[in-house]
Amino acid sequence: MEYLINKKVKDIEISGIRKFSNMVAGKEGMLALTIGQPDFPTPAHIKEAAKKAIDEDFTTYTHNAGDLALRQAACDFVAKKYSLNYQPATEVIVTTGASEAIDIAFRTILEEGVEVILPGPVYPGYEPIIRLCGATPIYVDIKENDFRFTAELIEPYITDKTRCIVLPYPSNPTGVSLNKKELMAIADLLKDKDIFVLADEIYSELLFDATHVSIGSFLREKTIVINGLSKSHSMTGWRIGFLFAPEIICQQILKVHQYNVTCASSISQQAALQALTVGIDDSLPMKEEYKKRRDYLYSRLTDIGLEVVNPDGAFYFFIKIPVSGITSFDFCLDLVEKANLAVVPGSAFSPLGEGYFRISFAYSFDTLKEACDRLGTYLNTIK
Ligand SMILES: Cc1ncc(COP(=O)(O)O)c(C=O)c1O
Image 1: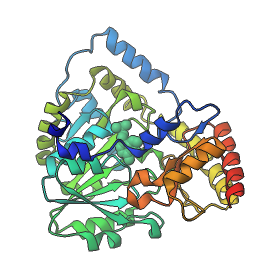
Image 2: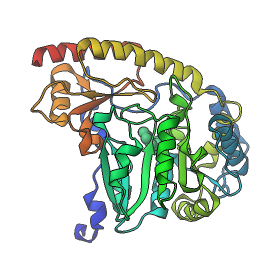
Image 3: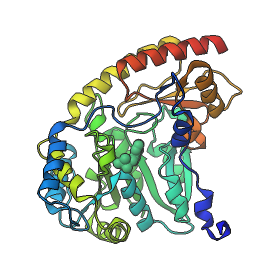
Image 4: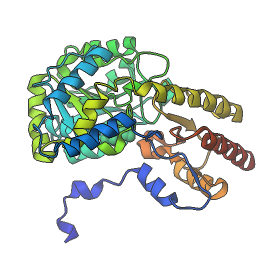
């Protein structure tokens, strides 16, 4: 029966991050810096809100777009933090994680033959959906630009087929963000063009030394803003994301969302309401801790002699492999075998990630210190 399966589905692959972490899972003595999820528990008051939600029978379908009180809280949150202006009744959808928001946004705006411009290296969650829609991902190499995805780099790739530009910042896997000036230049480039911007801002609360700027605050009519609680509130398993867009776009996306999931989990929505009201600053102590780890790693990695761009936010370093003639996959495999250290091959982040590896610092200081020791020793032996 396999021959009857949709060819586009057969052609996509399981994410390289999962593939690699599944491969090394369970290996004795292995230290893994592979997974991109916070290592803190979900704040206690949020967990309590979920328990209360169950006891009080918040266990039925909600409005397709999400509980109105939560939509209000989400709009208030992004208004306060990022000067975004969206109407709770018509311009926000509570989704099953940012992943579902990406899926329903692409399925609403893409079709056969159109092109989507993305930076490379990039989070691997976009390309498969773009391909399932029959659209083509067009990668812009940002490696030589300190991983900054700028208007200048984007412009030559715009054609009459360009339907959307993906702006993920702060970035997974590089941690690099975009500042207001860079975003204004992109907005200026697009102002007379009918091209959507998909701004994936899931790491917006984890920007270390600056305040996050959303392109949706000044390019509102073309922008779909994606955010969520997975990273900011350490809630990856609760599956709560948000999609913000002008009414005419949002109401079309809502149809795809409705026939996809009906609504996000009602219990998680009550937890999210707590997070976005009582817990609006819950990310601050976690951010401070990530920042300390970032500073520690930057000094350790550069001491080892590695070429790194210091991340502005999120919890990743994207590091150049200091030896030539080896693929990132084989390098990472060798690191597993010889140093008992698992990191993610750069090739998991589009072909443009080849030659690099990603480490996540959503791990304790002890783990990070030991990982740097192992990495340093390994590099000394192979050089
Ligand atoms: C850039 C980016 N976007 C979206 C997601 C998916 O987030 P969620 O777990 O809320 O679906 C991730 C998860 O790692 C990510 O790194």
